[in-house]
Length: 411
Image (cartoon, rainbow, N blue to C red; front, side):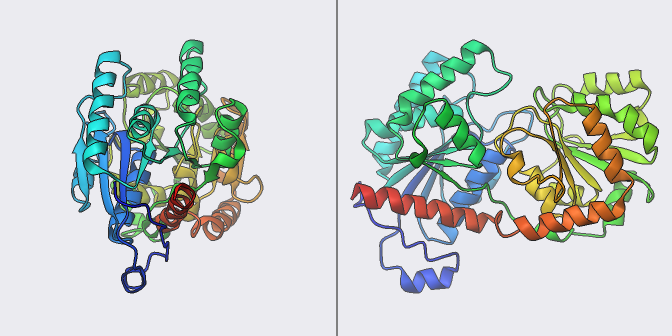
């Protein structure tokens, strides 16, 4: 293992770092379960890219196969300029034999790479990665993108994940939470004390959300949206716990009060056929536009095409679509789950509603659909308040400072 060094964290100006940083490059390994299209995965890739490109660090990303209907981010990882190791046995499903093989492979890779620090992400990789790092006596930081134990799990799975998290908490030098809400959940579950956690919001490239790549009228026309329609958009996999059913239940009342509303569902998944069947049963299928699976770089333009962003997920860490919508100048309506309350500020940026509620959801959308000045005011406050906070460079700087703390304490 190379000698531990204190990270300078001089900022994201490459020239400044090159001139001023005398310490050798840090060797850091990121470990994540799979590189599907998702918030945790994009967060991890931004971190690895920034550390490699802006800080000049020696970065390796270890991941399982990027398999899933959501699409894969493996090509982006391989284009990042840092080392990528695919561990076929590292998979989301629990399987004692393949999990054991993944654990042994992680140990072998960490012994070969000899990094200064390991950084784990997601539930499965978070458990196995921290066990492997402890085995080779590496300091390890773990990011909680969303609690591994959560609403919607069976009681057995819920208790099992809490037990697993407790078993590796002592091997974790520092936890990074993507929202204060994640810290509260882990502390309340007795996994670790408050002083072991730091909140660093999940950053992304904010520029495309500030300015669309082409005229909004063009984007809307390509989607078949008429100029006078009010677009209520939801982004998320068509999957369980994403809450599409509540928006569908609210839709008839919304359309009765605001017939010019069009719903735009961005994403795909196993529930698409059942969702379309329910819309046909209700006689409102023609008021819904489905994009299907889209590339991550298409998301900003799709948000620009919306007038209102709705997020009805039943479980999240902090859904990235909420700050993305606000930075694009859109009001947001969301259920009060995970870290939503940290960006959805009632009376300022949108409406925060009880989970699974339908009538309040209808009322919030109807109010916004009928009041363009309110939509503009909420969106403008969100843009001004959250743009800098959610830049990925800001996130990476914060992570760099956590490494600094961990390695300074260790040395």
